[in-house]
Length: 323
Ligand SMILES: [Zn+2]
Image (cartoon, rainbow, N blue to C red; front, top):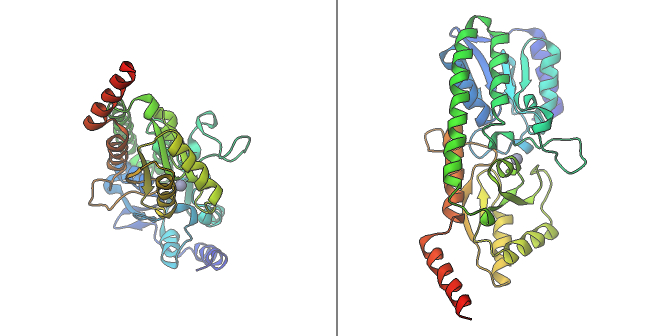
C-alpha cells in the first residue's frame, strides 16, 4: 500500500473511533523497532499487549506501512517509535495519529538531549537516529517510554516506574560488561567498517573510529567512490575484518573485500552485526541486551589480536629489532 492511501485510511479509521485500545484488559501498544519493543515489553509486562512492527532483518529507513500495520496502529492506544527520521516512511502516519488525539505516538529517541545527539552530517541540523547502540544514551528512550505508558495508563504508574528502574540498572550493567569485552581490542585496532553508518554512537561510547560504505540512511545508494574510499582505508590500515549487517545487503561490504584483495590485502568478513533490527525472538540476539552482546562479541572476535596474530606480531617485532 502506498503512503497516501495509507494516510487516508488511518485518518478515516481513527475518526470513526471504532477500535478497542484494550485487548483482554491489556493496553494495546505498538513499537516500531525491536529495541523499542524490548523496552515496552520489559516495562509494560502483562499490562500491555505489544506488537513490534519491524521484525528481524527489516530495514526501518525504507519501511512503508502495510495494510495490516495500519489496522494494528488504528487499534493501539500508544505507539512508541524511534523518531529522528529513522522510520522515514511512517512519519506522516504518526503525525496523523497524533492529530487525531485518539492514540499517542511518541518518538522515544528524540528524548535524548540534543547535546548528546550526533549530527547526520557536519553542519546539518538532522540527527543520527541510531542512538540505541550506546546503552547509556538509550536510557532517555527508556524514560520516555515509561512516561508515555504512565500518560495513557496512570493506574500502572508504580509498576512502570519500578520496572523502568530495573531496566535502567540493566543498561548500566550492560555498558560495564561491554567495556570489559572491548578492552581486549587495543585502541589502534578499533576501526569498525560496516555496510551502513549505524554505529557512530557505539563508536563514540567505546572508542572506535567508524566508517561505512553507505550513509546513515540506507535510502541512499552506495557509489563506486564510497567503495574505493573504504577500500583505501582498509588496505592502508591493514584492517583485519569488516562487517555485514542483517538488515542491509552484504553486496557493498563484499565489494570492499574483493577490491582490498585485488590490492593485495586479505580482509575477512568478521561476521554479521545487528544494526537496525534484532535477531529472531528465540535466538541469542532476540532481545536488546542479547543483540548488543552479540555485536560486541562478534567485533571483539574479529578485531582483537588472536593468539596466532600475537605470535606473528612478536616475530615481526623481533625481526625489526634485529635489523
Ligand atoms: Zn540505520
